Image 1 (tube, rainbow, N blue to C red):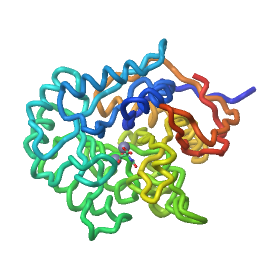
Image 2 (spheres, rainbow, N blue to C red):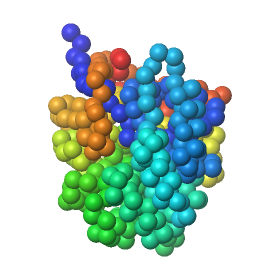
Image 3 (cartoon, rainbow, N blue to C red):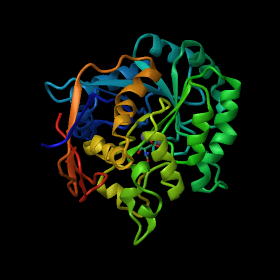
Amino acid sequence: MTQTITIRRPDDWHVHLRDGAMLEGVTAFTARQFARAIVMPNLTPPVTTVEAGEAYRTRIMAAVPEGIRFTPLMTCYLTDNIDPEEVRRGFAAGVFTAAKLYPAGATTNSDSGVTGVANIRGVLEVMAEIGMVLCVHGEVTSAEIDIFDREAVFIEQVLAPLLADLPDLKVVFEHITTEDAVRFVEAAPANVAATITPQHLHINRNAMLVGGMRPHAYCLPVAKREKHRLALRRAATSGSAKFFLGTDSAPHTRAAKESACGCAGIFNAPYALESYLAVFEAENALDHFEGFASLHGPAFYGLPVNEDMVTLEQRECAIPDTIAAGGDVLVPFHAGQTLGWTFSG
Ligand SMILES: NC(=O)N[C@@H](CC(=O)O)C(=O)O
Ligand SMILES: [Zn+2]
Ligand SMILES: [Zn+2]
């Protein structure tokens, strides 16, 4: 008998679906495994108005294959001069589920991001008042800070002071990559949580740099030392409701990745659950998989859990070298490898 695991259908609390042909090419992968997803607003131009959020949601829905139920949860990209009332209106109208803080220059399409949190104090105050979640790309951007230290320094210089100033603000510290972030979130009150990607559970920085430069292991925040990966694995599989699934699937074409200045982002949507489950199995924590994948996220966001179930079978899953999407070629996470579980729907 094949071993199976059945859990409530998961949600992805951080994903990049892009736009245009890429959106049409990648949305089905996320919609196949997840009921809902927090969709990142870092398009060009970014999603900064209720109207743009609604229009983007419509384009996403048009890219969902017939017969599949999928709900995109939209986010508003915060800029230095965002109007707090626009964010309030978008939340009240059910268009925006969360707002996103990109420190200017921190990552892909973050040029219009925030240059100092003091500039968005007004909107953050409104968000704390209405109970709207702030999603945070937690890295400082100053040239003098080493890229491997940027998350830890962000905690000290930005996140801790922000939460001291607005203790009721609901914050998701996204795609955490360090033991420092794990500790910070564990010690924080219940209004602070974190998402963890599959790649940061599987790889450390060696994967990027040993035996050649491997652009498909490059994403932001960059993978750190092994001790950080181990801390992330402990956090994700601990059963703590403060940690939940957010793939940060971030497709860039193979050409854009394999370049003299390669883009940051790992495309992990097609086998996301298989990838996470490998970690829970290796950590002997299969009983905590459903919490991480399907329960903790809705609880934090104050949303109902999904009613339907999904099953994964303990059967080899061969990950292809490439995946065609939007008229382009993408290299998925785990390309060419075999995982031990297969999503069967
Ligand atoms: N994670 C990444 O490496 N890239 C993301 C941006 C982000 O989430 O920081 C992207 O949009 O490509
Ligand atoms: Zn990010
Ligand atoms: Zn992201």
